[in-house]
Length: 308
Image (tube, rainbow, N blue to C red; front, side):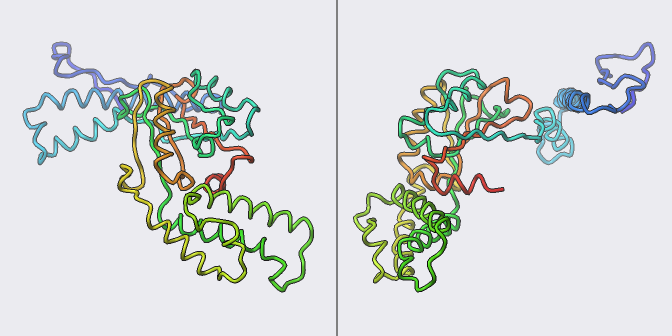
């Protein structure tokens, strides 16, 4: 953008000076200056948009939704609130007692926002993202709980059942026994599958290992039974809109309680991710801290999140 010289007697209140880049300002040539250069450019653009929005608001037709001026004003308002879409996700994973929660709380400058894995609560086995607050977030903490889509849940349950029965009915499969390492791998997948099924439907009497291991029960029949349980989940009764529910909190403890109560009311193994928006210095440059469950608390939905 170029700056036009105004006549000496011009009215500056009607012709405000827009921020401009200093003459001769060259683009950075070294990587160490790229981030600062880009940030300066973004800040200049937001200043210009803010100034333009304030000028347009003085027009008598600014409030007319059908006018072109109103459209330009809306765009200027959006640009003045612009946040860089560049994000860097940093995943933190560790089992109970290794100090992961203490590290997260230290990075966020909070006391006990990140729950410790030793308490056995539902939220310690769900992927949690810590993100910088957005312009629309007015509370100190805004929480989003996102569930898996119906097809994702169906695919997950089918995989769980197949993985579980493949291992426990291995001696009846009629194929040559695999190597010991392969048997151990199948056993680990079977345990992961059963932990997920039990966490979701453990309150059903039919959800027992005897039924799932019985070779007389067809795999397809078991899949249909479990998918029937899935269809009974009352998503709409839990305040979910498009499988996402939003909560707010004013304190760290209240934030943790809100999440825990929400997950208890849902089939939490089908929670894809919990997002917490807050003010934190470490998050200002687009960093997203991702709290990933450790191997001892990992269930399949979390492993889906980890996949590239």
